[in-house]
Image (cartoon, rainbow, N blue to C red):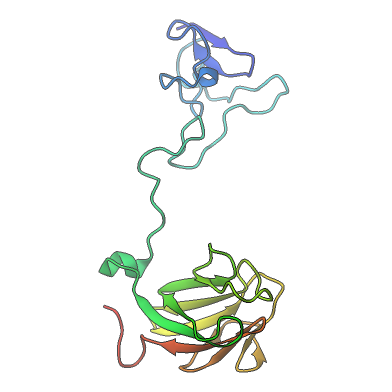
Length: 199
């Protein structure tokens, strides 16, 4: 084994590949997270350093290779507990806009945490009201173990009101509570409760 170091500080076996496999993107490469000792060919106990003295090999998240590409097996999103249990992410309740730009529109609430805001990335996307923060103005959660709903203030600047009271800490939601975000008022209608629960 003939270990060489390229201009960028990568170590590679010169007998196996004529050029640095990391820089050329070859799949026939050595794992950076377990550098080989150039003298013995065994896994080194020390990490190689670049010209500047910083570490070359860094710990990567599971499912990411040395080229920072996601590898098979870690491409799926996290699955909600309720979705895993029954096969779909079921509706557990609704919000209905009773005042504001989207008056008359309804929004589905699903199990676990539902992030609310104007962005398309939000679980509950309220597009019409520019006074609602784009990301995480508020959060509604459904706890399937206790069969309860809670409302949380989000990370945004805007204030959240429940029945005309400012939400400072997590608050239990009751049927037909009124939630106010920006200029919009939303009526909370639970599907899961005393009479029904997804099993």
